Length: 196
Image (cartoon, one colour):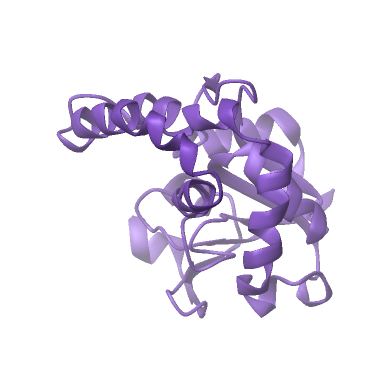
């Protein structure tokens, strides 16, 4: 049976949210995408007021990708921020088959996961022409569902994430659980003591 370590990505492998930072990067390098700002703001308000779900806001947040050279911007973004990846996640410091499970977009994470030699990436799928989500946002219980779609039999040794609340479902899969701090420190905890 394959032995696996699972990692969240944003604020776990890197110390920031990649989606929002990528939006800012693209805005600075492609200032004409300001035309999307009214649509993005209109989507953010009902989400912040808890009238609409996160998927609604994310579908509009990435509408700007139709106006840019996506591949060029993704490569430029990771050229700038790859050095921010925590040292313990570098390929030479990982012991087992590595699975990243994230709510961030596939078009953004595929490049960095390839550079870091991640064995399997499971994340939110997006239409690369207009930025809308294909299927379901890969968050919470959806992470577990998507994991089992890929791995019907696997032994999860360790799970690492910054979010004790959102990633309770994937923490339940591992023999060992690590809560990642803002500075990248990984603190092990007992799942049964934390959640049961």
